[in-house]
Length: 265
Image 1: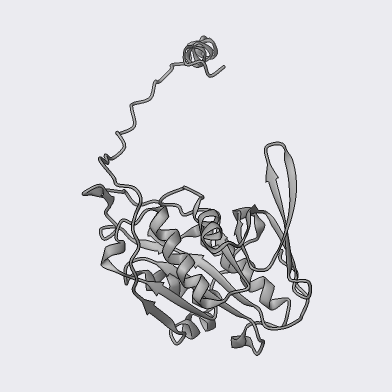
Image 2: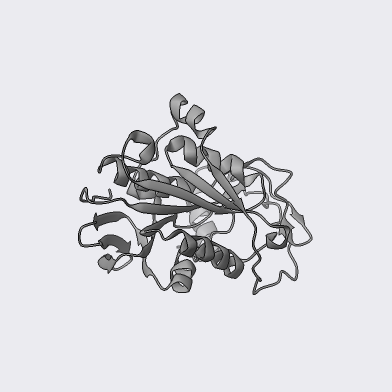
């Protein structure tokens, strides 16, 4: 949970993305994922970032929508329909949103995406940025680090616990690694990415869903150049048929042999 002192107005930016439904069958067109033929949803892992931002504000008087002073701005890059996913974040309680849409950004890689997000964040003058650790369509986990590098902000990534001292303008996080736990600290401004175990995102209430319809979504257009090019893309091959073992008393040994042949034991 993110704890703060109740001092001053805090501007929080949360980066979000519209992605194809995780359960949908993915297809490629000209080396790109066909996003038009599948249902599009708010990236699951971004909901944890939104929830963490909401908990910050609720612990310190709430957002401006709730009579408080703090603001949470959702920032997304994608086609115009990305506003549909952004609306869910607004219905959870975020204050407003910015969606960057431009035909030249179709198929943008991490270089271009981080460039666009960094430009919007820099113009907004936010105290800190919170992101989900990755998007479910790319699974790269690099955007928060690249955004912080472009902005020159402190990088506090893969956080499973966050604490903020507003009066001192400092943020500390706990990160779990293969070798143990790491404590990190930095001053504002900073870019934070949070893992899914940090909290439990709320479901939008009816009141929030109705309020989200009236909240502002600013539309921007800008260009950025991708540093990579897709040469070839193919759908993953169908899963091979499994092996059925009839238990005639020797099934256990057959299973052991099967695993041993594949060096799994």
